Image (cartoon, rainbow, N blue to C red; front, side, top):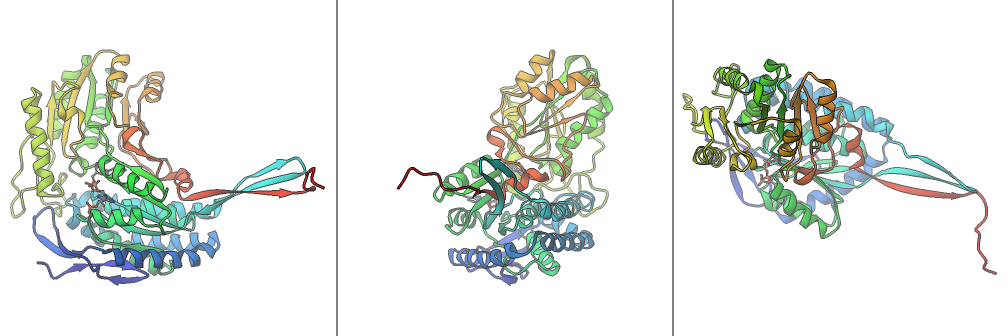
Length: 485
Ligand code: NDP
């Protein structure tokens, strides 16, 4: 058992949960590096009470004041980039070279964006006969954020920044597998001037999330996780008719036409399958390539994929790190075995990689060709570095097959034909569609899925709608019209 304890954070204080203790493992070494305590029902009640009190203080401030404090938080976060990036690598096994430029930086961008947006939240005015009405965008109260383990600090920022900008308080529950950086974010918010109780972190496993989703004092739950968890949380939240937003899984298509820039398309397919060792929800794990360029595409994809360096995530040269856990690595290997068993051609990868001084959670970037739509590797989310390539002949065929999925998170299209690019983007069933790029998620643009991939959007001004409720106020300028005597 580790001596380092990662705490919860309630009302501005580090607090040890009163539930069971469990270890947090470093995915690269497979060794415990810290211990965590589940938050119990009493801890959940305490956090909700603290958040309710924090909400009263925070929502009474002017939006400009809140924005100023959030802006300071973004600056503090950026100043701690390298330290927090290293912590993120220790917690989730991704390459340091990614964490140094993406995870903390994108979180800081998000806080900065919503800091600026806070004071722009306004309602509308409706002229009426002898009257007018106006709307107010009011905060919801106490919101809960529940995070996945692949982008822990980014997810905590994507949920907390719009929530706080709109005047809400938040309780964030990170994944049990990546408890470390959410607490650091809580420290940053406090240092920036966010009052105690406004941003709280509760550590724990699924049961802690379920207690939060059920709590009467909570107005809204935003989850990033699997489809199964999203459905469970919706059921739980329905008990008190809470608002929910869901950022869930996917099996996204990338459609590459034979007029595409081949090198660019290969780069996008690699980035959309092997970045963060494939543990990205929007990944284009179904790569549809038009038959005319399929052989050339595959040859170049294989050539470049074989150059990827799998290794110790803390080594700055490493491009593909460790999968999150032994259980997950085994699941990914089982999918690879099912691809082989179902007749897909294993082009490269397909095995675990031995990394000196590290554990066994490293899987080589894997390419399958000759895939068919019915194979498990083509239908189910693997969440690892496994790319399935499929070929197609016509635009209509590509659209129909790409859309044949219960998911609808993201999609991509590569073509140099302007009309075709927009036409296909419009036809694809997805919440986000990239033309001639993939997996680019600037804070300015909405992010979210359709179908079983989710409900609602994160990022952009669209996110603020999910953290506010409209109140309509009618103002009488005449007399109360009634036939009463
Ligand atoms: P899980 O669904 O296993 O967990 C997500 C979070 O929900 C965790 O904090 C988990 O806690 C918690 N949780 C589990 N059960 C419950 C419950 N009954 N009530 C409330 N909370 C609960 O997902 P993973 O962490 O394994 O993440 C991988 C998944 O997340 C993939 O499907 C991926 O596609 C998706 N994802 C989606 C993104 C998007 O934006 N669309 C982005 C990133 C990932 P604990 O960890 O303790 O089990």
